[in-house]
Length: 446
Ligand SMILES: C[S@@+](CC[C@H](N)C(=O)[O-])C[C@H]1O[C@@H](n2cnc3c(N)ncnc32)[C@H](O)[C@@H]1O
Image 1: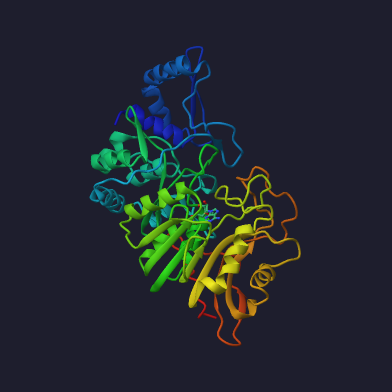
Image 2: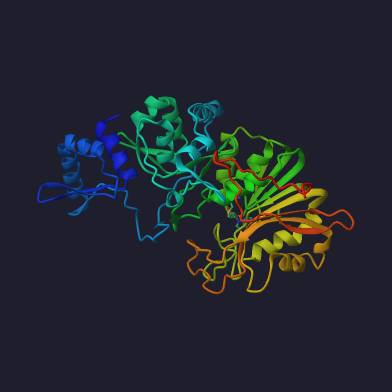
């Protein structure tokens, strides 16, 4: 790698901005980011940095900086971009995809290593979201730090550095799968690659992208839902709103057959890519409005369908809108349970539950189940979210959220006289320090 390439990566990670003023190199940095080592590195590379910045000025006009400035207007928490992003490509030689995964595993890019670096947010898992982290600063000599920088944070990393630390075949495969692009010595990610309970899941990037129907980043909810599912033998699993395919792929290890459904063609393309990446051959990903194009029943139903109350988008237009009251897709999932879940089946539904003031989740479930909630044994792993902040909707709900909850509701049919609705989340501390989920939805534990 070039030394300057490495330095630029670190500058971006630390949010240090450089610019030229009256032919002098100027710098602004968050507190603590400009330590003695960084000052020395900047001093020793000053001439090269000045040349780069002057080139930037001639391309972009005065005021060009070297920084991690996001494109387009930004909210304080999630920026918005408008950028077409090509789909990932399944390689003809599947062994090269398998080798790519093997190299991720071998270098230790897993949940535990990410948790050790980024910390754990007990309700939502590893702090992959930058806004949730305390002061993590990537070290260029650590391959896992570089993979987090590239594939989670979306900042450039030197191609030579990755090739030296992992392999040049790894870099070539990432380029051919269109996970990254190469500009000079720098690799820039187009997509994200998450470690997720032993699998690797490719998604679109976190920022809101108005040019595509983006495939959901693995936010904490994907890890909660993935963590809660008991990995016992199943005949047929159905994953509704599959997105990246994450829950279908996790279910494929312990289910004879799996169906993943999504209404978005982009999501189906990502799901098929991720199935190939994880060498899965027992999953059918289908373009379907919930269960409409799927026949038959299942003994494991997993659902994480859009749930945000949003008057600016119809339910299903994107990965977040659940229509005006947020429950237009959720209610259809619950209504389908009596006919689509086998007698011995279990359903796990992750959602925001945007309950109108004074109502509870169980009231709505009872209504959607035709007054027959008494036939179900329910574990309610939700917690209150009266200050829920919707970062994605164009017209987020702005009323009374005092009864809103978030989390996973798990249902199975009750044995005669044994119907229960048990609130088991407590304060919802689900994740352990090593990034694993410490709670499995187990109805047999009282
Ligand atoms: C909240 S994301 C969940 C993604 C993934 N399952 C996860 O947990 O990481 C919701 C997904 O539901 C899909 N979706 C929206 N409306 C749908 C519908 N009517 N039928 C099936 N899928 C739908 C979206 O395209 C999106 O991929």
